[in-house]
Length: 480
Image (tube, rainbow, N blue to C red; front, side, top):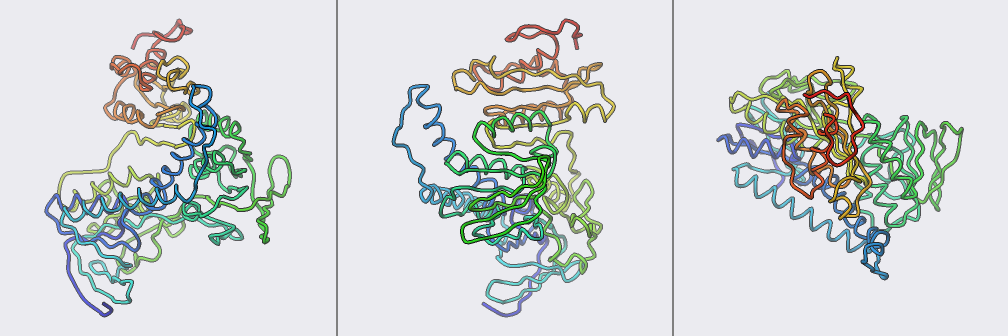
């Protein structure tokens, strides 16, 4: 009901995405009353417009593509297999709705109050809540958690319209498949959704400004994905700048300038995915006295996720990169524990990352170049999936796992993998790095057979010069 009201709460949580809802749940476990305000749906971008819906679409496209390509080779034929976009979208919405209801149930069980609306600070201990019906509430709080996430970055001249020029949110709700799609941005979203489109018959071209796709990722992983994208028929232009865009009733035409000179690329639609920016500029940070970077929008925090106002915390994408849901989960928990007075802090040695392409890419810890920059003397060993029994049995032999270790000490520094199920076992490598394990420790860990996770132990043995399932090539490896 429209009007003006007032309430008080121990902790105000602004944003119901991964960082915000985890903070509210943990606060409830610690006996703190939390009021969570979310302007859209619980679960944030990850659950509603990112991680979960995109993986649902990717899963469906993999099934469809496998039936048409590898199926006949292994004795599975489905000559009438067809891709039904409306049915897929209905299933995807069902998956998202179930997950969202799960979040709501968890928040309720934690004793959190959830309100739909826009929250804006009006002072260091107060905020205005604007409800969808036009009503307002003043909220006085003791502590706060800012978990407003991020929004898609834009480029002047390439503004999205939801029809011909789309962002990920639009693509994940599309009602029809285009015949062709240009993708501006070769990052995670561009590559994952580009593969989805290509598998279901869309002609795809990816344009990336930086010298490699997946900028910032371990170069060997990016190269491996580039091979796979080419195999799918996706045309990739790296080191290429988009300089202009024209729209016609038939589609779009994008001007680009790259190593091959200037060119015009035409397609039915353009998907713009050039990164995200923190959603920090419309929540009254100045009125709360919270400092933020005026250029990037990020809110500086310490290892307890405190801003310059110690009772106000910031977590997730709005706080700092990397913009990962699992990072936000942990930050939300730490912020809640800090508010409750527990001796906690956000401290990690290894942040895993996964790209859900084919091959699946997973990475944690240092690359060889990173390790050298940190003063280590790194050495690499790469174990091929083709030497794994499970890979052969699963028709998934392309791929490899690479270990980076410190040569003098044998310390495990990094693990990088490109292949089936890589994202499912990268957490083991993250745990090993967090615990200060050596490569020898990883080699001594018994991995179940036949699994893809055996690649970890086998790569460790190879690094040590003691390979079991590939021929020994290194004779000068010392024992660590």
